[in-house]
Length: 286
Image (cartoon, rainbow, N blue to C red):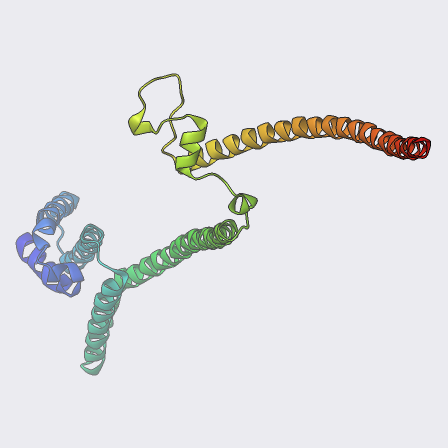
């Protein structure tokens, strides 16, 4: 009787989604154990079997609850989606509703209709559980969405900052490239003239360590040329000042000599005039 009862309950619960996956082998041992335990308890109660039908009905209801509980655990293990669970539960409730309509049309006993209606209670509990789990999942999804939105907003702000930095750096680069430097307008010596005048050999032809080679780096080379140009212009400025000082001294000396020459020329003119008078007097005496 226990085996047939289990078979009956498994057939009844084939409307559950897990039964469609052929997972009933997990439930059968538990059902048989509970059915045998219940049979033992009723046997110890006494030899009176007047309520055998009621006990069998109660045992069926107990085993149905166990089957439903086991199937719910299987559903959790199988990780069914809410949509699948709802679809299968609705199908089960629809089957129970059809059975109730059929029993109502055939004028079945009230106890049988009540028993069929009780079969729907676990499914309503499943709907309530799924609804609660779906609600919690919605809240969790909202929280994850808010977190993801926050990350996206943060990433977007970071991207905007990077774009602003990029535009700023591009403007600075263009400004540096378009900068009109005074160095570009300086008339510097060529590299060869710089090497020749400064006495610095090129790096590839350096023979001694006494002179510093011409740098290979353009920036260092420009600095060296500018330093050399500065030193050359300072040297030329000193020479200019020296020459100007010499010019002043020579000009002053020339002015003094010119004054002396002009005085001597005046005296010579006076001497010539006096000589002419003396010559005229001598001519008269003769």
